[in-house]
Image 1 (cartoon, rainbow, N blue to C red):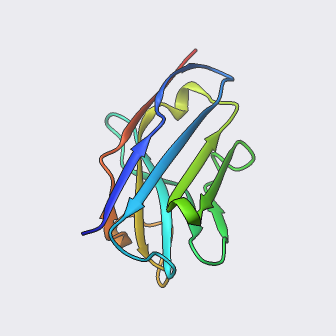
Image 2: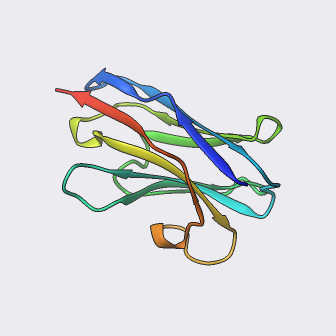
Length: 124
């Protein structure tokens, strides 16, 4: 059974940094994409970033490009999201998710597996 477990969320002041981790287990992810999504209260879940597990190709939303960096440690089966220059509008629950490499990467409904989420709160 596939499990994705996020960690690293918390409360930070605007301009600060956090690093989220997503530990994956239960299968081989060599042909998978791992993505980060976020959902703020009253808003739809939105794409943040994604990485192809085998090739390392990365994808970002325009709202985080240049501030967030996604990376993977294949030996640890873990994907990271380094978040710098955080803004109050980055406040949300952050989820990691996994899907096969084919198909749309930025669409939440295309993902098969989800973690439980971790809260990120950025104060002004």
